[in-house]
Amino acid sequence: MSDVKMTPHTQTVLHALLGRDDNGERRSVVLTEGLYGLELSRLTRLPNGTLFPILERLRQAGWVERYWEQDEIAEDEGRPRRRFYRVSSEGAARAPLALAEATAAAAARTRTGPVRPGVAGGTVE
Image (cartoon, rainbow, N blue to C red):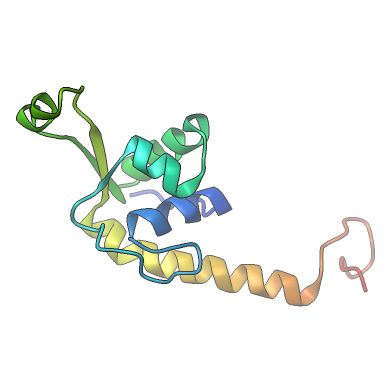
């Protein structure tokens, strides 16, 4: 499967799907149950035009699975079915490591300062 580009928004979505807040602290058990689109949008504060392309890239990479809820549940509540997203077994194995690497890379960039192209050494002092 392809590697996932770990943008800040992608990291936010993965944290939500893993049941963690943006600092990596456990929020709840979401790993097996999944979240539906509106729930994810509220948790991540990302608009649909940002959220759903990320979910689709994660799905294509094999890190996320999507599924429809059962008809009976939606009918009992008098609403349309919801599409849920959850971390796949591959995502559960790879996402925490990728998140840790992204956090370490961001910390390293902060320590060295911003890069200034065209300046000898490439950093601001």
